Length: 152
Image (cartoon, rainbow, N blue to C red; front, side, top):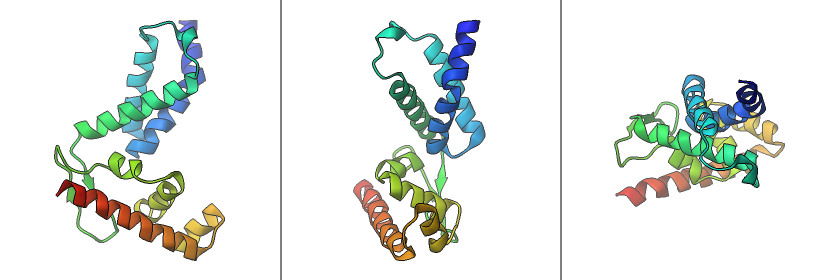
């Protein structure tokens, strides 16, 4: 029991936030994190042979979150006020969008599209100019458009 408590205290929050980045829902991220935590408790090989335990935990969480999203039917609205795109089995999921973006683009996408913040607010958050954020935002739209056109 103490070993599980140590494991929980040491890595559950990291698992949770790694899942939350992908699923963007606290309850879903908690469910995914619990699944990963249970997998860790039943890890098949020697845990002392793992070279990068933090990387393993984060990778397991992200993969489990992507699997969770694939198992759900999701609607994705790319811009506020635009119609939603219903994701089917071969459709586009939020995880696929985030995979095609680099880290800064993911931040811009999250704050601009999901949270609806202004370009200047996002620029202030990143410590860059609003023009830079607008330029990156155009790049993000092109990447997402290309992602959609690959499926056609």
